[in-house]
Image (cartoon, rainbow, N blue to C red; front, side):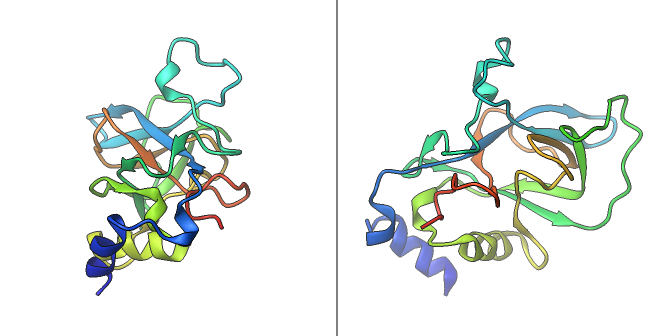
Length: 169
């Protein structure tokens, strides 16, 4: 039933999603092939990443129009041990203890709340999958996870302590 609901909503402008608001997006930084691990995240708009302008996001009010079709970053915690990557682990670059995957592109404006986005992830990937969040790595901004998602796409990510989600109403 949820799959049918998504098909209907995608083509409809409903009262909660017509305001033209923005949602927060992230991007994949890199993939460590030897470990099967991706680093995902973004930089704030303070200009801290002049070498990577495509990695800038806005976790306070969003950085992409919610009517844009982008994949949702989904995650499944399975308590995976942290790999022995040659990186510095800290608050801004943590380990999410699981896996990540991307859905097909979908407008962020079709979702009314986080539970609908979580359900979307679960319908696509199975039990235990949910929307990935800004703080899944234990801190914020970036984290490492098992996966090998596309590196050429931005994707929707949830942030729980700011009003920067397409599904915040």
